[in-house]
Length: 501
Ligand SMILES: *Cc1c(COP(=O)(O)O)cnc(C)c1O
Image 1 (cartoon, rainbow, N blue to C red):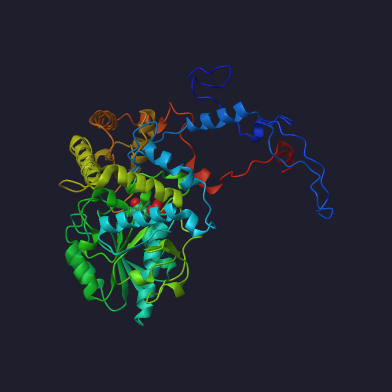
Image 2: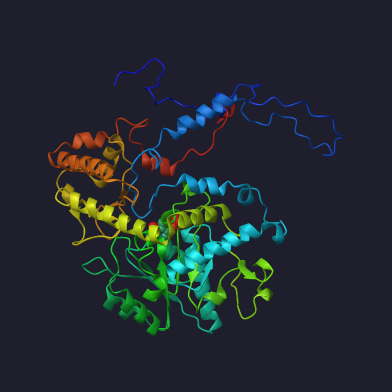
């Protein structure tokens, strides 16, 4: 590729850090000189420069706009990242979350002045408990993993209240890493349960591991292979017969919402990733919410606060003493959790309605099966039969080609698609986990499938050099990921300091 004079390539503009663009004295706003005030800092007033870059407003606007164009995102392209459920975020939700009655309130306001916000929490709780068939929900967990922590802490509290000290938690070998991590954080020993030939939990192996030492079994359903655990009723029965609790990882609720109520499957508690099932932004690890629904045996141990309605209106219960008969295990979060995320999720649920949520899960499963069927002759599906909301392939189709799953993902970047999830779940070799979600139309699915089929053929024809060079059309080429992980450069230091280093 011929280099340009500027280093820019059309729409791809080289973008220095804001600190590197610093022009001392430049300012985006025109502030009046501060009025003189009496020195109250006892001589500790800063004398050196504060170190913020001098920038104009258009510079800052361009900076962030350019950065936003360097990445593939859900608002720019198809983003089939399995397990993560990158759903479209309807703009209506954003509009509702910005209403002053929701956006401009403070957790310390008197409760009588925020009755609408409390009612919203109560209504969101009603939707989540109705959709799952569970009597209670804790709204404060800030992510799926945090919701797992909530559920496992409730389980631990319930066992302690019974005077039992069970030490082990069982998880399937295909479990998301957060499951064993959560159990370990709660002080449990983690033991994994193998899968059977059909990609589901091996029921006999599970039964063999259950016993008086087991506190809980954590299961994702549909599981991380995109398959419905069809023996889930037998699993629940066996877990309960051993006196253990049945935790469900609800990250894949998107596939069954409006069709199956986890309570009817024998589940004792389950977290819900609002950013996966109810279309709230994933936010790059930013504010999320992972409400945890709890069955009757665990509800008394739910964390505070909870919203209750009585003749006086809505009320927040903040202290255990106000909840006779219950034994809340504590709090998980300052104030009430990510309120703005719950506003968005409720806007989504109410705008779709119960029938719309049911259609969304049906369409998600239909789209995944369309891709599974369309790709099955070129790629290698890991398990026979239909899938739920995500289609799992392994790398057998690349055998002998010298091309890896990672190479396919890099080549997809040049095709203008965000790659699928790679190398997860760990139970199949070189996994490619594709989750199209319900909002994609047939034209997008066909375009993606055509690219992937073309790449699979190219790999088999022996063009491994093409793959090893990919991506070639992105703002950055293939990165040295090992160095990036081992010696990340996380701080900018001014050139003078750098010279001194
Ligand atoms: C996403 C996910 C989690 C963790 O959820 P976060 O909201 O990212 O903390 C747990 N289990 C499964 C199966 C997931 O897909």
